[in-house]
Image (cartoon, rainbow, N blue to C red; front, top):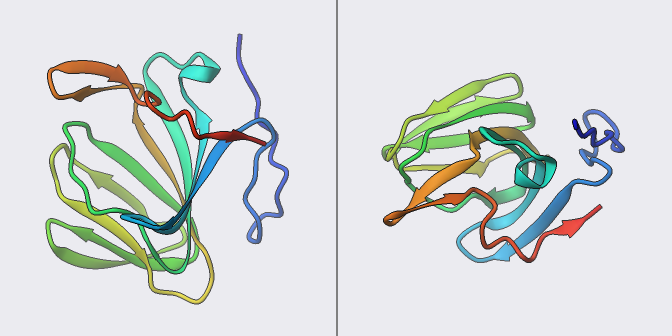
Length: 143
């Protein structure tokens, strides 16, 4: 059966969804970031997951690369995506494709939050195993 997480925020100001799971990052590899899982294994999705990320001004995602590709849609703010070491300016409405194994990182260079939707495969390769994208996310909080 399908699942609806109702938008409870204010468009352009606060992005929140009832029943979605989230976690905050402080000063680690990801700085001043919030990750919200909107669709994934918990909702019954077999083939993809959708997450919403938000970075406070000066925040950034961790620099990473992995075997799966993903798509990103910028919903608010402006910043930079670094693809294979090359910075690119990004802003609301931009769409980004990141192929497998491409090093990437997103940084908020603006003075307001930078938020985006990120679509990934529901399962991914982790070493020699295929795991659910949500594996190991025991620290998620439900709204």
